[in-house]
Image (cartoon, rainbow, N blue to C red; front, top):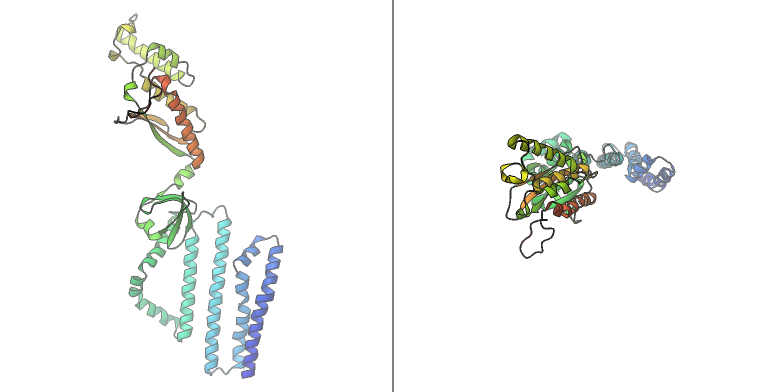
Length: 395
Protein backbone atom coordinates (compact mmCIF):
# COMPACT_ATOMS: atom_id res chain seq x y z
CA UNK A 1 0.00 0.00 0.00
CA UNK A 2 2.83 2.38 0.85
CA UNK A 3 4.59 1.75 -2.47
CA UNK A 4 1.37 2.21 -4.45
CA UNK A 5 0.58 5.41 -2.56
CA UNK A 6 4.09 6.71 -3.21
CA UNK A 7 3.72 5.89 -6.91
CA UNK A 8 0.40 7.78 -6.91
CA UNK A 9 2.03 10.82 -5.33
CA UNK A 10 4.90 10.69 -7.84
CA UNK A 11 2.44 10.36 -10.73
CA UNK A 12 0.48 13.31 -9.42
CA UNK A 13 3.56 15.53 -9.15
CA UNK A 14 4.82 14.40 -12.56
CA UNK A 15 1.43 15.24 -14.11
CA UNK A 16 1.44 18.61 -12.33
CA UNK A 17 4.98 19.41 -13.54
CA UNK A 18 4.19 18.21 -17.09
CA UNK A 19 1.10 20.39 -17.28
CA UNK A 20 2.87 23.41 -15.79
CA UNK A 21 6.24 23.25 -17.59
CA UNK A 22 5.28 21.58 -20.91
CA UNK A 23 1.59 21.84 -21.80
CA UNK A 24 1.06 25.40 -20.50
CA UNK A 25 4.04 26.95 -22.43
CA UNK A 26 2.95 25.13 -25.59
CA UNK A 27 -0.60 26.50 -25.17
CA UNK A 28 0.82 30.03 -24.77
CA UNK A 29 2.90 29.74 -27.96
CA UNK A 30 -0.07 28.42 -29.94
CA UNK A 31 -2.26 31.25 -28.64
CA UNK A 32 0.34 33.86 -29.63
CA UNK A 33 0.58 32.52 -33.20
CA UNK A 34 -3.15 32.37 -33.87
CA UNK A 35 -4.85 35.54 -35.23
CA UNK A 36 -7.70 35.10 -32.76
CA UNK A 37 -7.33 37.35 -29.73
CA UNK A 38 -9.71 35.36 -27.56
CA UNK A 39 -7.18 32.60 -26.83
CA UNK A 40 -4.62 35.29 -25.93
CA UNK A 41 -7.11 36.58 -23.40
CA UNK A 42 -7.56 33.08 -21.94
CA UNK A 43 -3.79 32.81 -21.50
CA UNK A 44 -3.51 36.30 -20.02
CA UNK A 45 -6.19 35.59 -17.42
CA UNK A 46 -4.53 32.23 -16.50
CA UNK A 47 -7.51 30.17 -17.61
CA UNK A 48 -5.42 27.42 -19.25
CA UNK A 49 -2.93 27.12 -16.39
CA UNK A 50 -5.73 26.77 -13.84
CA UNK A 51 -7.79 24.30 -15.85
CA UNK A 52 -4.71 22.10 -16.33
CA UNK A 53 -4.51 21.67 -12.56
CA UNK A 54 -7.63 19.53 -12.81
CA UNK A 55 -5.52 16.82 -14.47
CA UNK A 56 -3.20 16.03 -11.51
CA UNK A 57 -6.09 16.59 -9.10
CA UNK A 58 -8.17 14.10 -11.04
CA UNK A 59 -5.30 11.55 -11.09
CA UNK A 60 -4.82 11.90 -7.35
CA UNK A 61 -8.54 11.63 -6.58
CA UNK A 62 -9.15 8.69 -8.92
CA UNK A 63 -6.15 6.72 -7.68
CA UNK A 64 -6.89 7.00 -3.96
CA UNK A 65 -9.44 4.11 -3.77
CA UNK A 66 -6.98 1.87 -5.63
CA UNK A 67 -4.00 2.40 -3.35
CA UNK A 68 -5.51 3.06 0.08
CA UNK A 69 -7.88 1.26 2.38
CA UNK A 70 -11.11 3.24 2.24
CA UNK A 71 -11.66 2.70 5.95
CA UNK A 72 -8.29 4.12 7.00
CA UNK A 73 -7.72 7.62 8.36
CA UNK A 74 -5.13 8.24 5.62
CA UNK A 75 -7.75 7.70 2.93
CA UNK A 76 -10.14 10.04 4.73
CA UNK A 77 -7.44 12.72 5.04
CA UNK A 78 -6.36 12.40 1.39
CA UNK A 79 -9.97 12.53 0.24
CA UNK A 80 -10.49 15.78 2.10
CA UNK A 81 -7.26 17.21 0.65
CA UNK A 82 -8.49 16.18 -2.81
CA UNK A 83 -11.85 17.87 -2.27
CA UNK A 84 -10.15 21.06 -1.04
CA UNK A 85 -7.89 20.93 -4.10
CA UNK A 86 -10.88 20.66 -6.43
CA UNK A 87 -12.62 23.51 -4.58
CA UNK A 88 -9.60 25.80 -4.94
CA UNK A 89 -9.12 24.93 -8.62
CA UNK A 90 -12.84 25.40 -9.28
CA UNK A 91 -12.75 28.81 -7.57
CA UNK A 92 -9.68 29.85 -9.56
CA UNK A 93 -11.18 28.68 -12.88
CA UNK A 94 -14.47 30.45 -12.12
CA UNK A 95 -12.64 33.71 -11.36
CA UNK A 96 -10.63 33.37 -14.59
CA UNK A 97 -13.83 32.94 -16.59
CA UNK A 98 -15.29 36.14 -15.17
CA UNK A 99 -11.97 37.94 -15.67
CA UNK A 100 -12.17 36.98 -19.36
CA UNK A 101 -15.80 38.14 -19.58
CA UNK A 102 -14.89 41.45 -17.92
CA UNK A 103 -11.99 41.97 -20.33
CA UNK A 104 -14.30 41.29 -23.29
CA UNK A 105 -16.74 43.81 -21.82
CA UNK A 106 -13.98 46.44 -21.52
CA UNK A 107 -13.07 45.94 -25.19
CA UNK A 108 -16.67 46.18 -26.39
CA UNK A 109 -17.55 49.72 -27.50
CA UNK A 110 -21.20 49.26 -26.52
CA UNK A 111 -20.54 48.11 -22.98
CA UNK A 112 -17.05 49.39 -22.13
CA UNK A 113 -18.43 52.36 -20.17
CA UNK A 114 -20.97 50.28 -18.27
CA UNK A 115 -19.95 49.99 -14.59
CA UNK A 116 -19.89 46.17 -14.53
CA UNK A 117 -16.63 45.82 -12.63
CA UNK A 118 -18.47 45.81 -9.32
CA UNK A 119 -20.92 43.18 -10.56
CA UNK A 120 -18.07 40.87 -11.54
CA UNK A 121 -16.45 41.49 -8.17
CA UNK A 122 -19.69 40.52 -6.44
CA UNK A 123 -19.89 37.29 -8.44
CA UNK A 124 -16.28 36.43 -7.64
CA UNK A 125 -16.93 37.24 -3.99
CA UNK A 126 -19.82 34.76 -4.03
CA UNK A 127 -17.51 32.15 -5.58
CA UNK A 128 -14.94 32.77 -2.84
CA UNK A 129 -17.63 32.38 -0.17
CA UNK A 130 -18.82 29.06 -1.61
CA UNK A 131 -15.23 27.86 -1.84
CA UNK A 132 -14.55 28.91 1.75
CA UNK A 133 -17.64 27.08 3.00
CA UNK A 134 -16.59 23.91 1.14
CA UNK A 135 -13.05 24.11 2.54
CA UNK A 136 -14.25 24.71 6.11
CA UNK A 137 -16.70 21.84 5.70
CA UNK A 138 -13.93 19.48 4.56
CA UNK A 139 -11.48 20.54 7.25
CA UNK A 140 -14.01 20.36 10.09
CA UNK A 141 -15.84 17.32 8.78
CA UNK A 142 -19.17 19.10 9.11
CA UNK A 143 -21.89 19.42 6.48
CA UNK A 144 -21.98 22.69 4.47
CA UNK A 145 -25.55 23.13 5.73
CA UNK A 146 -24.22 23.09 9.28
CA UNK A 147 -21.64 25.74 8.36
CA UNK A 148 -24.35 27.93 6.82
CA UNK A 149 -26.52 27.51 9.92
CA UNK A 150 -23.62 28.56 12.14
CA UNK A 151 -23.02 31.61 9.96
CA UNK A 152 -26.71 32.48 10.17
CA UNK A 153 -26.58 32.36 13.96
CA UNK A 154 -23.58 34.64 13.95
CA UNK A 155 -25.04 36.99 11.34
CA UNK A 156 -25.83 39.75 13.87
CA UNK A 157 -22.29 39.79 15.22
CA UNK A 158 -20.84 39.64 11.70
CA UNK A 159 -23.02 42.57 10.59
CA UNK A 160 -21.73 44.68 13.47
CA UNK A 161 -18.11 43.79 12.79
CA UNK A 162 -18.27 44.13 9.01
CA UNK A 163 -20.88 46.91 8.87
CA UNK A 164 -18.83 49.24 6.66
CA UNK A 165 -17.81 46.44 4.32
CA UNK A 166 -21.39 45.24 3.94
CA UNK A 167 -22.63 48.79 3.31
CA UNK A 168 -19.91 49.22 0.72
CA UNK A 169 -20.82 46.00 -1.09
CA UNK A 170 -24.54 46.83 -1.15
CA UNK A 171 -23.88 50.39 -2.28
CA UNK A 172 -21.48 49.20 -4.96
CA UNK A 173 -24.13 46.89 -6.36
CA UNK A 174 -26.69 49.73 -6.29
CA UNK A 175 -24.29 52.05 -8.16
CA UNK A 176 -23.72 49.42 -10.82
CA UNK A 177 -27.34 48.39 -11.28
CA UNK A 178 -28.79 51.93 -11.27
CA UNK A 179 -26.06 53.26 -13.60
CA UNK A 180 -25.26 56.20 -11.30
CA UNK A 181 -21.63 56.15 -12.36
CA UNK A 182 -19.55 54.89 -15.25
CA UNK A 183 -15.85 54.74 -15.84
CA UNK A 184 -14.85 57.96 -17.57
CA UNK A 185 -17.59 60.09 -15.98
CA UNK A 186 -16.61 63.54 -14.74
CA UNK A 187 -17.96 64.01 -11.20
CA UNK A 188 -17.70 66.65 -8.47
CA UNK A 189 -17.93 65.88 -4.74
CA UNK A 190 -17.15 68.99 -2.71
CA UNK A 191 -17.05 67.29 0.69
CA UNK A 192 -14.26 65.00 -0.53
CA UNK A 193 -12.55 67.71 -2.62
CA UNK A 194 -12.95 65.40 -5.60
CA UNK A 195 -13.30 66.90 -9.07
CA UNK A 196 -12.23 64.74 -11.98
CA UNK A 197 -12.73 61.55 -13.96
CA UNK A 198 -13.86 58.20 -12.54
CA UNK A 199 -11.10 55.67 -13.27
CA UNK A 200 -12.41 52.65 -11.34
CA UNK A 201 -15.60 51.48 -9.67
CA UNK A 202 -15.34 48.59 -7.22
CA UNK A 203 -17.79 47.07 -4.79
CA UNK A 204 -16.57 49.21 -1.91
CA UNK A 205 -15.02 52.33 -3.40
CA UNK A 206 -14.82 54.68 -6.37
CA UNK A 207 -11.50 56.07 -7.61
CA UNK A 208 -11.47 59.57 -9.10
CA UNK A 209 -8.47 61.10 -10.88
CA UNK A 210 -8.72 64.81 -10.11
CA UNK A 211 -7.69 67.48 -12.60
CA UNK A 212 -4.53 68.12 -10.58
CA UNK A 213 -3.61 64.44 -11.18
CA UNK A 214 -4.23 63.42 -7.58
CA UNK A 215 -6.49 60.44 -6.91
CA UNK A 216 -9.43 60.46 -4.50
CA UNK A 217 -10.83 57.20 -3.15
CA UNK A 218 -14.46 57.60 -2.09
CA UNK A 219 -16.52 54.97 -0.20
CA UNK A 220 -19.31 53.62 -2.38
CA UNK A 221 -21.93 54.00 0.36
CA UNK A 222 -21.12 57.73 0.62
CA UNK A 223 -22.25 58.20 -3.00
CA UNK A 224 -25.55 56.50 -2.24
CA UNK A 225 -26.32 58.35 1.00
CA UNK A 226 -25.13 61.80 -0.17
CA UNK A 227 -25.38 63.83 -3.35
CA UNK A 228 -22.75 64.40 -6.01
CA UNK A 229 -22.63 66.07 -9.42
CA UNK A 230 -22.17 63.95 -12.55
CA UNK A 231 -21.30 65.84 -15.75
CA UNK A 232 -22.18 62.91 -18.02
CA UNK A 233 -25.40 64.61 -19.15
CA UNK A 234 -23.41 67.58 -20.40
CA UNK A 235 -21.02 65.36 -22.33
CA UNK A 236 -23.85 63.34 -23.87
CA UNK A 237 -25.74 66.48 -24.91
CA UNK A 238 -22.79 67.67 -27.01
CA UNK A 239 -22.93 71.21 -25.58
CA UNK A 240 -21.24 72.90 -22.64
CA UNK A 241 -22.76 75.90 -20.92
CA UNK A 242 -21.29 79.38 -21.14
CA UNK A 243 -22.59 81.48 -18.26
CA UNK A 244 -20.50 84.57 -17.62
CA UNK A 245 -21.24 88.26 -17.06
CA UNK A 246 -19.77 91.54 -18.22
CA UNK A 247 -19.97 94.09 -15.39
CA UNK A 248 -20.75 97.38 -17.10
CA UNK A 249 -20.06 100.79 -15.63
CA UNK A 250 -23.57 102.13 -15.00
CA UNK A 251 -22.38 105.70 -15.58
CA UNK A 252 -21.76 104.83 -19.23
CA UNK A 253 -25.38 103.76 -19.88
CA UNK A 254 -27.36 106.38 -21.89
CA UNK A 255 -29.60 106.99 -24.90
CA UNK A 256 -28.13 106.75 -28.39
CA UNK A 257 -27.84 109.82 -30.56
CA UNK A 258 -29.10 109.84 -34.15
CA UNK A 259 -25.52 109.81 -35.41
CA UNK A 260 -24.77 106.71 -33.33
CA UNK A 261 -27.94 105.01 -34.54
CA UNK A 262 -26.90 105.64 -38.14
CA UNK A 263 -23.41 104.31 -37.48
CA UNK A 264 -24.55 101.20 -35.62
CA UNK A 265 -27.10 100.44 -38.35
CA UNK A 266 -24.15 99.74 -40.66
CA UNK A 267 -23.06 96.75 -38.56
CA UNK A 268 -24.11 93.76 -40.64
CA UNK A 269 -25.40 91.42 -37.92
CA UNK A 270 -27.09 94.32 -36.07
CA UNK A 271 -28.76 95.91 -39.12
CA UNK A 272 -31.98 93.80 -39.02
CA UNK A 273 -32.52 94.72 -35.36
CA UNK A 274 -31.80 98.41 -35.92
CA UNK A 275 -34.08 98.64 -38.97
CA UNK A 276 -36.94 96.96 -37.12
CA UNK A 277 -36.53 99.16 -34.02
CA UNK A 278 -36.34 102.35 -36.08
CA UNK A 279 -39.56 101.47 -37.92
CA UNK A 280 -41.27 100.53 -34.68
CA UNK A 281 -40.23 103.70 -32.86
CA UNK A 282 -41.09 105.90 -35.85
CA UNK A 283 -44.60 104.39 -36.02
CA UNK A 284 -45.16 104.95 -32.29
CA UNK A 285 -43.83 108.50 -32.56
CA UNK A 286 -46.25 109.39 -35.37
CA UNK A 287 -49.20 107.90 -33.48
CA UNK A 288 -48.32 109.89 -30.37
CA UNK A 289 -47.26 113.24 -31.81
CA UNK A 290 -48.63 113.22 -35.34
CA UNK A 291 -47.02 113.77 -38.72
CA UNK A 292 -44.45 116.53 -39.07
CA UNK A 293 -43.36 116.66 -35.43
CA UNK A 294 -39.63 117.04 -34.93
CA UNK A 295 -38.13 114.44 -32.57
CA UNK A 296 -35.36 116.84 -31.55
CA UNK A 297 -37.91 119.15 -29.97
CA UNK A 298 -39.18 116.47 -27.61
CA UNK A 299 -37.72 115.21 -24.37
CA UNK A 300 -36.37 111.67 -24.87
CA UNK A 301 -37.87 110.63 -21.55
CA UNK A 302 -41.38 111.25 -22.87
CA UNK A 303 -41.01 108.72 -25.69
CA UNK A 304 -39.27 105.43 -26.38
CA UNK A 305 -35.70 105.71 -27.54
CA UNK A 306 -32.82 103.33 -28.19
CA UNK A 307 -30.24 102.93 -25.42
CA UNK A 308 -26.67 101.86 -25.86
CA UNK A 309 -27.03 98.96 -23.43
CA UNK A 310 -30.21 97.65 -25.09
CA UNK A 311 -28.56 97.85 -28.50
CA UNK A 312 -25.43 96.15 -27.19
CA UNK A 313 -27.57 93.40 -25.67
CA UNK A 314 -29.17 92.83 -29.08
CA UNK A 315 -25.70 92.82 -30.66
CA UNK A 316 -24.51 90.14 -28.20
CA UNK A 317 -27.44 87.88 -29.07
CA UNK A 318 -26.95 88.46 -32.81
CA UNK A 319 -23.22 87.73 -32.46
CA UNK A 320 -23.93 84.45 -30.66
CA UNK A 321 -26.51 83.51 -33.30
CA UNK A 322 -23.92 84.06 -36.03
CA UNK A 323 -21.18 82.02 -34.34
CA UNK A 324 -20.52 78.50 -35.60
CA UNK A 325 -18.99 77.59 -32.24
CA UNK A 326 -22.25 78.15 -30.34
CA UNK A 327 -24.99 75.50 -30.27
CA UNK A 328 -28.01 77.10 -31.93
CA UNK A 329 -30.48 74.41 -30.81
CA UNK A 330 -29.88 75.06 -27.10
CA UNK A 331 -30.75 77.95 -24.81
CA UNK A 332 -29.17 81.20 -26.03
CA UNK A 333 -29.78 84.63 -24.55
CA UNK A 334 -28.23 87.81 -23.22
CA UNK A 335 -29.82 89.13 -20.04
CA UNK A 336 -29.38 91.80 -17.41
CA UNK A 337 -29.01 90.80 -13.79
CA UNK A 338 -29.64 92.86 -10.69
CA UNK A 339 -27.31 95.89 -10.46
CA UNK A 340 -24.46 95.53 -7.98
CA UNK A 341 -21.87 97.87 -6.46
CA UNK A 342 -19.46 96.38 -9.01
CA UNK A 343 -21.61 97.49 -11.97
CA UNK A 344 -24.53 96.17 -14.01
CA UNK A 345 -24.05 92.47 -14.88
CA UNK A 346 -24.86 91.64 -18.49
CA UNK A 347 -24.88 87.85 -18.61
CA UNK A 348 -24.15 85.71 -21.65
CA UNK A 349 -26.05 82.43 -21.40
CA UNK A 350 -25.38 79.97 -24.23
CA UNK A 351 -23.84 76.58 -24.98
CA UNK A 352 -20.62 75.87 -26.84
CA UNK A 353 -21.02 73.04 -29.34
CA UNK A 354 -18.06 71.15 -27.84
CA UNK A 355 -17.56 69.54 -24.43
CA UNK A 356 -13.76 69.22 -24.33
CA UNK A 357 -12.34 71.53 -21.71
CA UNK A 358 -9.57 73.19 -23.74
CA UNK A 359 -11.74 73.77 -26.82
CA UNK A 360 -14.58 75.07 -24.63
CA UNK A 361 -12.35 77.58 -22.84
CA UNK A 362 -11.04 78.79 -26.20
CA UNK A 363 -14.56 79.38 -27.55
CA UNK A 364 -15.64 81.17 -24.37
CA UNK A 365 -12.54 83.38 -24.38
CA UNK A 366 -13.01 84.27 -28.07
CA UNK A 367 -16.60 85.38 -27.42
CA UNK A 368 -15.69 87.65 -24.51
CA UNK A 369 -12.56 88.95 -26.21
CA UNK A 370 -14.77 90.24 -29.01
CA UNK A 371 -17.55 91.60 -26.80
CA UNK A 372 -15.14 93.48 -24.53
CA UNK A 373 -13.31 94.93 -27.53
CA UNK A 374 -16.54 96.09 -29.19
CA UNK A 375 -17.96 97.79 -26.07
CA UNK A 376 -16.58 101.27 -26.93
CA UNK A 377 -18.52 101.22 -30.23
CA UNK A 378 -21.69 101.39 -28.12
CA UNK A 379 -20.36 104.01 -25.72
CA UNK A 380 -20.10 101.49 -22.89
CA UNK A 381 -17.25 100.63 -20.56
CA UNK A 382 -16.52 97.89 -18.04
CA UNK A 383 -16.61 98.65 -14.34
CA UNK A 384 -13.24 98.78 -12.58
CA UNK A 385 -12.36 99.83 -9.07
CA UNK A 386 -10.72 103.20 -8.52
CA UNK A 387 -7.01 103.09 -9.07
CA UNK A 388 -7.21 100.83 -12.13
CA UNK A 389 -6.86 102.53 -15.52
CA UNK A 390 -10.12 102.80 -17.46
CA UNK A 391 -10.20 101.83 -21.11
CA UNK A 392 -12.85 102.11 -23.77
CA UNK A 393 -14.92 104.87 -22.16
CA UNK A 394 -18.14 106.35 -23.54
CA UNK A 395 -17.88 107.93 -26.93
